[in-house]
Image (cartoon, rainbow, N blue to C red):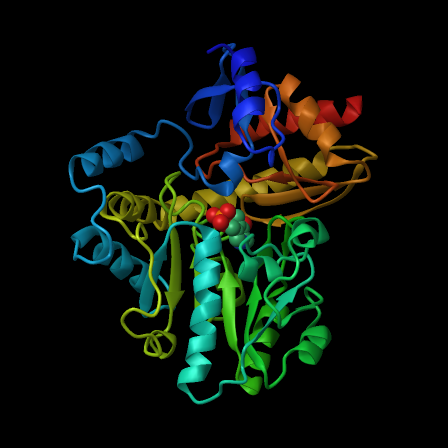
Length: 394
Ligand SMILES: *Cc1c(COP(=O)(O)O)cnc(C)c1O
């Protein structure tokens, strides 16, 4: 099929929930992707913070080839080694004692909501069924996770959603104090908000939230689906604040581009779950988990994380040097940076394609930079030069 035929077939055969730019991606190499006309793009999106190791990474390709020759799928009715190996590695590298595997981020969040209710029910506290999330949050689009996603556009068409969800103001402890009650099962927060516009939670805020949850008997869930796995320059974004959650949802980059979700929990949470109470057909399959184990080994290497801190700081510094009246703020942590503009960011992402930059936005006015974590300084120079030129054109 040529590109036009693909556009036409998409219109005819795909449910119209996505808007895509008019080119067809065919392959990638390092931090670059290529379209069907042979045009090259520097990738600032990484498939929405997924492709942490970039494209055609030799280690990742070899890991997939090796895993493909073993078992692909067995269901969770049977033992396989890769699943326990990945769980062991995740536990050893985090606050957690146990892992529940899923297939997507949304599903990991949905699991966290069910586990939180079960935790309290098991303790005879069946009234604790509500959840507190934050303004600007994104936690997914199933009925439970959507109820905790602060977006009228996403929620509106699908009400009624799960009852008992409320929102406090992000980075404002006084607001959280008002929302967390004796009926709160858990509080859920992204240590760095992604879709909501790239807002890092302050260290004091996360620490205060931990204290508040302990004081009121609510569980604390960190959604690190986007900001976790090295994205901020530490393996987990919450490490910057030195606080620990009761549960943490992971997904996007965990298997280097293959679909996976994981929910990391403490023994206290895990011990409230019993056989048959939750489950999934595909979650934690042997092929995906053996690839994810290698991705985790690579990303958790202190040298890899130091690279993210260094290139992240460089990206921030270079973006701050751009002299454009359209830039209102540059913010973020590590290789998760948002540039807030005074115009619709779609104008800039669209112009990006012509300049060979794959850009994405977060909400209306923020251009979100979440490149592959293997990006190097010369790529950042190229990115910033092009981004500066685009801003001068709009
Ligand atoms: C992407 C994302 C989700 C949803 O993950 P899916 O894999 O798309 O289901 C949830 N929370 C955050 C913070 C995300 O970035």
